[in-house]
Image (cartoon, rainbow, N blue to C red; front, side, top):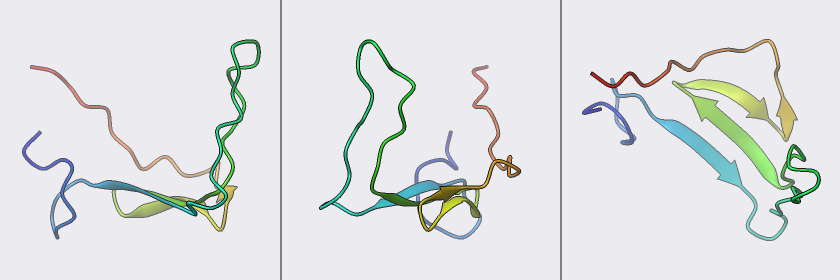
Length: 68
């Protein structure tokens, strides 16, 4: 976990870049799987997963956090 959560060269950082004017959660109790709107980019381990608001479903750049 020492290499998580910082924006530095050589560490693991996941970033979400959103527009604060348009971001909105669309999920409800009856439809919890609705995607949010207004998220422009999601970068996981330096690899864009969402770019210009579009998910790239072919990208799997993350790794699970393992508890020892």
